[in-house]
Length: 387
Image 1: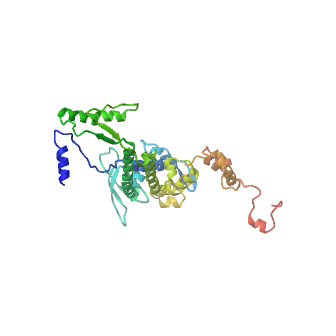
Image 2: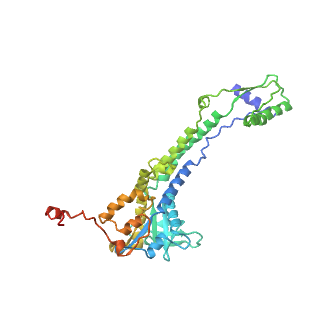
Image 3: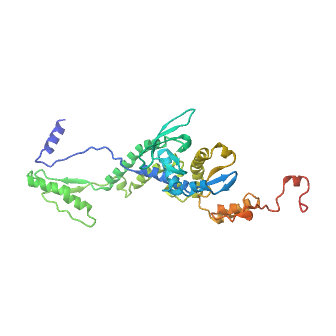
């Protein structure tokens, strides 16, 4: 303890060059987690906004008021793409979203309280919408309440990020340290202790050395008073001519991968990789988008149609089959098979390709190739040319 007391006494006086050592917490203010969460939420929301709400009336597909409400104009201030993108985004990021049904329009609530019921409907109170001054109150049957499958997803991501953010910050600090110049400045024992000499030394360390190290072209730094500069040899990755930026990138990739898994998004889609995109898109639709579409469809059917209409085959179906871009060459064979066995009509084929159906009896007529026949006909021996 005597040595350290003498050391700090010598360099802590006002008439000597002050040496300060600051011990700080490792900085973790990096926003890769937020970027990964936002990327997942935006990808899911934008994909879901491409779905079509197909409406059926007594088993027949129709395009009437409900279709227009869900696919074109949910409210006077938003089109359907904006509305459903916002609704799904809030559902993903906040774990839930509340849609108010009022005056034959749909509105997204900003905040609310809920009084849960057991044998009666839930009651939603203090519902706030934009600049509306008076809060609203609604029963469960008067709202669409969208909820994600797991309310602890973001908490898990937060915990994971707490560890990885420290690793990223440490890697960044190590990279800067290995890439920086270090050395010894030798001063003779007879270096003057006058105020002018101390001021010159401070200017050398804080200004001239800084300019010397940061200069992009050749530079020369004159040293006076017997001062000598000796640069330390680089060790580790810097000595081998390699950088640790790759290590930082791998940590960031881990954060994106784990966040994508939490939201059932294939990591290659999130990061824009083109390898095996077809299979990744199929998994994305199967495990992420379709369950979300089913949840939205179920909520609409039970609140906006009800049991009586649903039993009469009046309902809405959230169709996600047209989300992927369709190349006609890739689906021509499949459409041919579906058409010639009578599964698809001409209009069905046109709609799948994103084209306008022709309508009428011709568009709805089904065709079956001549070679197909009932199995009973073959068993009875009445097939062939006679059939």
